[in-house]
Length: 560
Image (tube, rainbow, N blue to C red):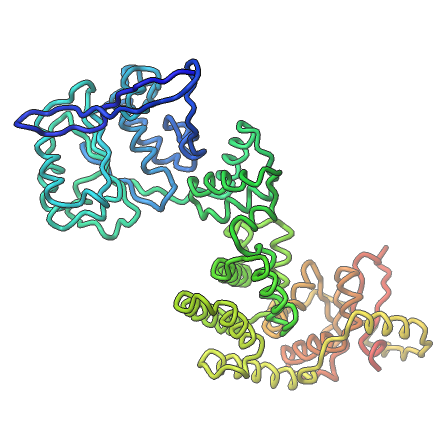
């Protein structure tokens, strides 16, 4: 065990016309050559060269080319949300321009310049926090320093973080220096709020926009860190951390380190407990329950969140995100790509989206946005606000807002349209047990089937050209019904007889549901300009057909 007094030269002070390095002494305790201090994971795994930066390949390729070809700009502006690599790239660029042995634009990390910058003792690389050094006097001090050449390195690099927080006078004082600095000075400005910067500052810099890091890239990095650090983590847990971090690598690594404190294998449940909210599945269950007006499920989920000391504000944000996912699934065929969903998640969301209209989604999102604002004002009433809002969302009659009235009007118009098609208004769909009993009774019944007229049988069937328009109308009335016709073929004889050949599972369900059969007959009649009683509808099982022989059952066989 030994004690060392280690000097670092972090600051430069202007005293009496001269510049002096101020030594900061640190007592480092260790054994042999190993330091005893612990570094946070995000600091330990900070990228050391451009190739190590995750998710910003376009930016790092340009910076590497500029360093390798010695075509450096005098000022750089790095914009982007937190944790996307702005400060890391700034430090790597400072090393690369001063490196004694650069490799294809990357710093070697072995020379004295690279090691001094990594250790934070390079006097020619100055990091400024504009949040605390935002006055005109700070800029004037910097201008005085610029007049002197670098002490040890090739370039003096100024890294100004959160530059948008500088005052107006400070920006004005910086303009001339930023436009024509000495050849040995490079400015690197970093900001999370680009829109707050004066255009006069932006126009003098080479701008790079750092995008949010994709979920897959963050997952890959988390698993790499976990393997190296001996951390046990499941793939699902890594995906949850990546989603919660919202594209920020630093946030993801910090949350991983927080979960490590549990001293157990990190799984999905542990991550949700650590974040302090319900999980993504609970948010989707809330939406599903609200669509079915299932009050018991709604209250049960909220109670579980509260009893587990979860933060309802965080969970409420997850509900908002979940509604956004449902809206995208409902309106886009490429939702699985946009939302980074698994096949199971996409199927589940599609099922939820099928019971919602856009008007109902608009009404719900308006309600939850208002509730989110109310929660921020009334911190001690979050549960009451959440439960009252969800109750109103279950029943539009409990709200007098414009969105609720518009939704009720749309549902009324839909009910009238269904009645015109011959479907009873608000008729509940048969339950699974009722469907099973109905099928059994139909099988046991020995009703004589009236033969179809001979002339109809002899008329050949052809593909129904208007099926696309019919399917679109069915989707407007009941989207879940239209989804079952994927891969179906529809034929007609031109005299009111229609044959639908589809998957056996959907065929059986369709035959046992009088309401769905009535909807199809009504839409076909509307499309053909006739009445539903003149439509003969036959459902055939594609799987069971062999050699052209079919077992077809008409609607009269099942309901008459």
